[in-house]
Each structure stands twice: as structure tokens, then as C-alpha cells.
Length: 114
Image 1 (cartoon, rainbow, N blue to C red):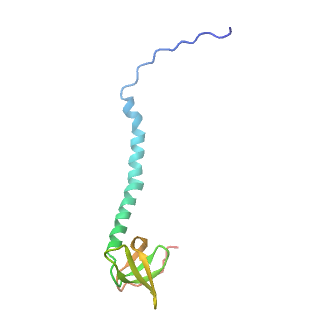
Image 2 (tube, rainbow, N blue to C red; image 1 turned 90 degrees about the vertical axis):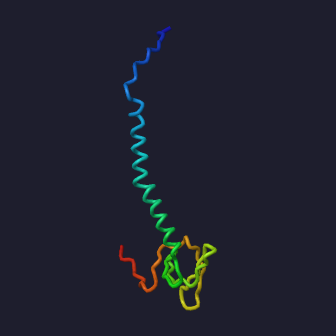
Image 3 (cartoon, rainbow, N blue to C red; image 1 turned 45 degrees about the vertical axis):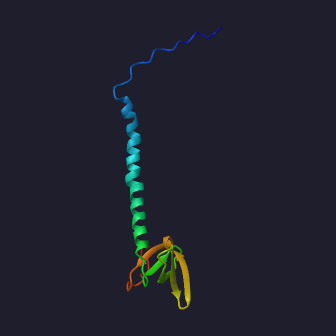
């Protein structure tokens, strides 16, 4: 009674190149994520894998839990190493749980980054 009929209008012509320009922000976000997050993380993982693979007997290691000890035994066929924490205290640790490896003779330094 009080309403009038509404008719759809014909769609106007799309601007040239509009489809490609619509995806440009998404492509830029992906590129930024790649360079700021994905690439550095994969590089860090590769370095950690190499560090863990080069662990030898006599190296000083730091675990993710903060334990510092000398490597007593490296089991090449498994993913475990044995660490001497103190006199008569030997612990088995999974290699991937190492956060730092220092070669023989390198002294253990306190973290001065605080």
C-alpha cells in the first residue's frame, strides 16, 4: 500500500584490471609473512638441526631446561645422548632438546643479555 516496486539496475562496466588489483594486497601480505616469519624460522630450524647433528663426546651442552653438562656418550643410531651433569650424575637427553652446544674447551659463560 505504501511501498513502491523496486527494480534492479543493470551493473556498470567493471574497471579494467580491477580483478588483478583486488588480489595485490593479499599477495603483498603473503610476501611480508614469508620474509618476516616463515623464512627466518626455517633458517633457524636448519641451523639447530645442523648443530644437534654435530654434537660430539666432550662438548658442553645446554638443554632447553637449563641444565649444563658435558656429553659423555653419543648414540648415533638413536636420538639420545648421555650428559654428565656432575660427578656420578649422568642423564639421557633427546638431541632435539638441546638449546646450545659449545665445543671442547670453550668455557661456559653466564648470559649477560639482561
